[in-house]
Length: 220
Image (cartoon, rainbow, N blue to C red; front, side, top):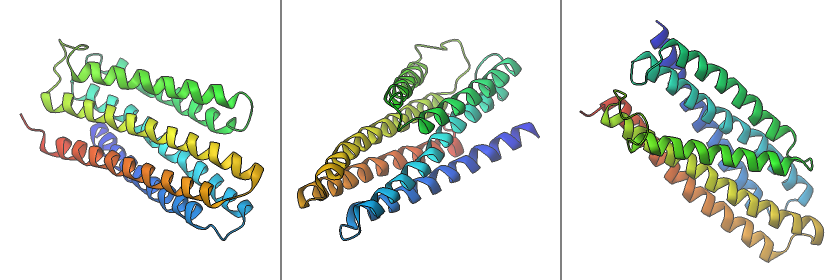
């Protein structure tokens, strides 16, 4: 019963993630291309983008937490109940940290929270790649398909980090627009950032599709 609940939640979070990404992408396109709208209105829409972006961050944490719990339940990693409770505790603390990053993003300390968030993701990418390559957990009964899945999930997180850097470029341009007013050149930069971020998002979802295929197929 517990396995089924975890599996259903794991799938539901994936749908939640996709829905949030679609809202973000469509709203950001509106921000980029509504050049005739007032700058104040576009700024409000961009705030909505960042609010919805929180749901993507939540989904990432939940997927990592639930995936670890499922791996422990199926004996792919040692520890069983201890790992399950540990994953739940770390997941809740991580969610609280993600909320703090969002809450203080406009404060002077927001820059340091955002940097800590990125370094946390770098660490997770490194951990997943090490597990995928067999550098960590060599004695664990991890199936080959699961190691590939961990490597692909590291790629998903890396794509998310890449999109964060596009957002940094966006807000750098946006601050110039707030100071000097919108210009054709600045609007062109925002549009270009939109398409670059969209391309990376497409690759991210290709990786997630591959993860889903591996999870269903489970090749030996």
